[in-house]
Length: 331
Image (cartoon, rainbow, N blue to C red; front, side, top):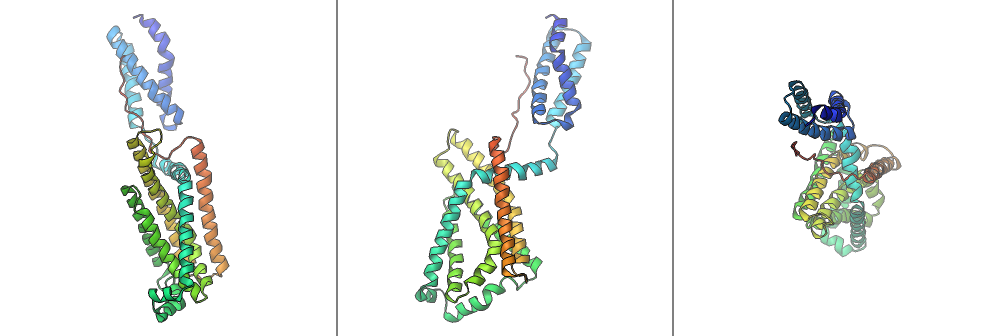
């Protein structure tokens, strides 16, 4: 091998690798990919030089360069704050956005079932009698329903609500392990409970109080539950229709997407819990309390649409990205 020609041909790559290693803390995505590629190429050059040349200076230079590059490649990591920002601007919203049709269908089905059951309960005294006695219904309508939101200190109640809402959503997430099959039943139970309360309140002319108390936090809370249910059922459907990928790969990707949603909903449900604990029982007029709930709901949907659509257009899936483990070779 003509060592001078070899050095002349490959020196630009070596110089470029040195520059990237020196600036490794400020590289963008494309430059990181270039760093990995050049590291593998220069490691191959080192192998060739060792086998075909006795030039200790060249071998030493390339050995040191490859060692520094290896440290940069294997030791480099993204700062925690960047991972945090990426999760909430890419990973979580893109998974929610990609599940939007499942999310919408879940919402419509829940609201339809709730409405039908609420009308059935509200217009049938026999059904009401089977649920509770007239005295119990009066107690619920006149006292218990409203007192539920004010019987505990606001901050303590907000914490309880957050834990409870998170548990409901986690139940739905856990159900995805069973391919989402139990999720419709969980949604039915929640829809039935909401509808029975609405029907009983409506039967005594208290529907305005019902919506005045449940709407401020309920919009965001139910939206979070619907999203959790949607990604869980979508996981089950992946078994039936994995698309162009192998079924195991599709399930793994969708499973990681479910976990992304689970983590993101912790924050969403925290906000919902704060609204339920601090706004719902407050002395604000009904229109103001409902307005806060509507603003929170609109802000969340706008967040998902803006960041999710942008990430989807960029080809993001929300999946965990793993760089392949490639060992340099001399071939």
